Image 1 (cartoon, helix red, strand yellow):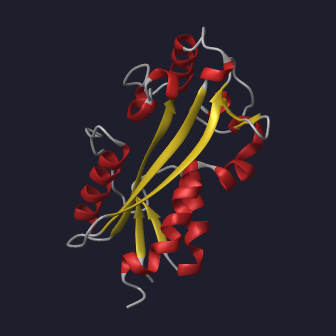
Image 2 (image 1 turned 180 degrees about the vertical axis):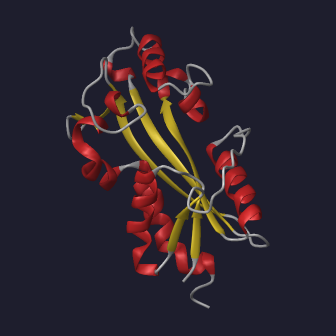
Length: 201
């Protein structure tokens, strides 16, 4: 069974990956499972660069297939902000409340027609001595004027899925995971899994 190291200790993310890759009998483990405490600096200027940095660094450390992601919120009217700085938009503390406050403050005067945004996720799959592969997912929505909902994390309370009339934080994890940027990237990864890992050879 192929072991896949997830460059994260987020249990929800690990569970989601396990579910989508279940047909391929993958042994998904976290850094914590391996007793590793690695913090790879995200010095890239794009989501792909940051995902690649994390995946390749941890693959080199473990010698195993490693999956890393970099994801964030991009607002059209703000020139793509917060983008790769989504988690630390209001400072290095990575405070969700302050990040949302800053975002809503910068968008306070914008009409609904100019509040379009999207979440994006880039996954990087790496193994020492092999090329790194990428999968990407995107989910479009609109930024609300105030928080709605209690579930989720990050910008979920202000990210509205227009055709559903709900924010990510209102719809709950199961519904969110069916349409989210990360789920779409993971489905793309799953579709290429055997080719990228050489299991079909």
